[in-house]
Image (cartoon, rainbow, N blue to C red; front, side, top):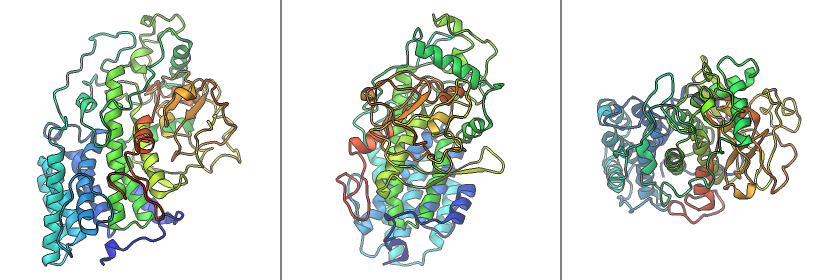
Length: 526
């Protein structure tokens, strides 16, 4: 058995701290002498970000990149599984001769998949392919591995033919500000981003709308809307005098291209956990397919509700029919507003998937996860950790109306970084002015991983969060929920939810939760 296939026997029994490696990987993203799956994830991200957007639509966008990574890692997974037969394949089984090289199969699967989906990157990809194969001794094992990888790539390409990527999906929006309705936003006033993703055929869900939120954004005549509007107006403004430096830092931290940022973190995690090639292929296939499906579901909801962004709502507060929302014609958010509708928040959708897969794969909610952000120079690095199950209890994070730090700061009951960071990625976008909607919602009405933003409390119903949370007193069951006030300080978003990730990954058993000791019944793991 090759070294790349040897089992990392204790990987599911606690985190092996490899601080130096984790930090280095978080900062640079390049992985040397690890395994082919990790290396080709880095290559895939680079190619996707640089690809011609006419030939490879959406490959450079935060959510769209995940589609191309899902294609790639499903092909890699099927190629590896055809050789080691550890798990159930995604789709039809790929045959493989005994002794075929796993590394050659990974390289070939990734290369052939990416060559098809990112045609203008062929020169870059071929160079990487030739160099990678050159490190494997010539022989029958190498040749067989190459053929297995090519067959796996062709299988995924055939399965996903006509899946709706880049389909002509018209999206009509007003030409002038209209109460509650999205229109292109400053500074670029770009056309809506990848509306076709809202109608794609998902990888695991029954339809793009399977997990569409039950509740719409709040009525513009409601007190919830007034509260959200005014808090974002004050805290999320580019020239806010009440936003703290901590809120600004964590808000900007998450403005890097999402898939690129998470991919770098996943590669670091695979190395820190010393995952072998087979285990990395399994984890990355689950991770990127779940993220891609959460993106598809999130975009379905975004273009269904088509809710306006703060940068449109606040300068036009006079048209929403609510006398308590005084307009500010010169208002601008700290962060650049992305060119897609407000609700639900893309970060929360994708992060729900990430959190759930990490918990399920490693068999514990306590997973240290190092994330870096290259929007700063030098890059900022944070290590997040979940402190137990959130559901059925709800945790409150008091904050003053003007965004002053709550009791988490310096509290011995908070995780180590809780005094430094805002509790979640979902809330982080408020201080930069991209999200601010929230409304009261009964916990009973919220899906498994809803991130409900209402009032002064955060409610995260996910079973697992990779972000630090302050373990204060539980919120009374059945009571109306309120969101963390800092969420409105962002000015880009008005409401957050991560239901797509966790709901599809856990409660509907679309993806496996694997560990050394237990088996979950899913189509990809056994």
